[in-house]
Length: 155
Image 1 (cartoon, rainbow, N blue to C red):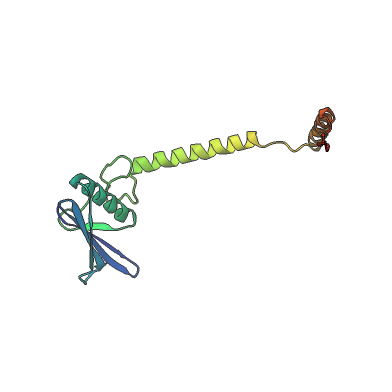
Image 2: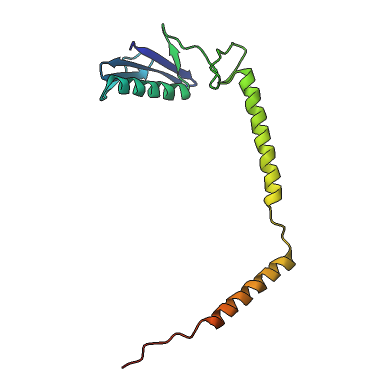
């Protein structure tokens, strides 16, 4: 796998992160842009496991806001459908997926409000008092049915 370089430049941050594969291990170099940075490595049981680990690391860096630079610059794609985003589209979703997501969110909120309105118990003091009396009566009857405890007598 060739070397991939990612950069993060926001506010006061000005960092880079590089990753590449060497057989069954991968190497990572990171630091401030303009410096040599630090280098770390990790050995994996197989080349496939190494590639999967690299893809997980790359996904993590992209989620944190890093952007790939260099020859293999990644194009901005929609997180849902994979369509290439144009410059007019902002965020991780294309216009169609963004609209569908908003519609789904609105429908979910409506359903939640409807079920919450139905599931809310009505506080009726008379019914609550009747329920308390019923439970007291049931407990009293159960207590009467139980035989008194017999303690072991000294033999």
